[in-house]
Length: 342
Image (tube, rainbow, N blue to C red; front, side, top):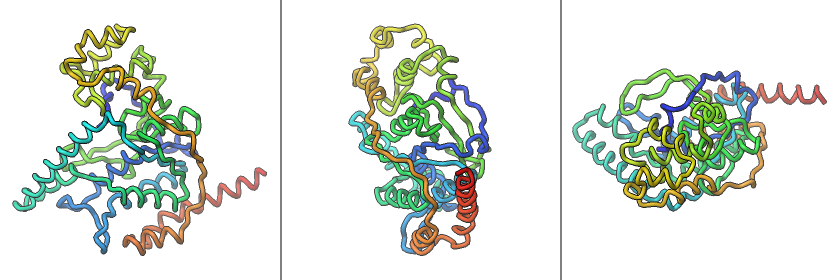
């Protein structure tokens, strides 16, 4: 879910050309859930291979990642680790919503209601350990780095950007801004379109960049106040926020108060949230991250990719070859250029 800061932020269009040769830290779980939600059959079922294994996540990951690579982007895939204990309630709530959607999907199936099946199917998407392992294997065979976060992936991705090992975070959520990423890139889809929430239609989307410093200056707050603002409207650790406070009111409150104790007393935090505000605040401030990673980009292993995708999951050989050919040519040109410079 994340925090909804959309109405407050300046988001500027950015082209793939602007991202050429830039290292970008991908919020992997966020991206994989997109694929599981959107890459489905007409009746909402996940795509599968002849052995009955789900392939929606692999189809999306291969298509989008090779598209990035063809355009000269250098993605680094950051995977979530252990979830913070404070997130347990939210995860339980999400599970209940998924079960409710699953029940409604089954009812739609019995009624042969295709629209209803499509509507509810994506709402109980589940990313299994096997799917995560398969995604990691695919990323590795494409020659791209994998970073395993000790906890939240967005915190680790932001840490990589703050260390200047990556230029920006790629995610549809805004949480990485709370963790201090300098830049956040959204809407890096392949086809330039996205399914409308809760509807069967699509809308045109363009890549957008959010610059943290620019936005903090515009909002006249610092990063700590951005965290507090987000807590007031709702985060993964207190999804409902404080009742009656929306983004604009939250902004006025954090602009008004420098003493956070006073602010949370004024909004009667303890009447709305059963967790002390300090626990959530310092979780964002001190989310575990690691420096134990190495960002090495290698040539895609074409032979192993064909074995994994074509022989293992029924991908089209032509599709895999067509996606890899321009990447291999680009790698070759870069290698020749490097030798020439030497």
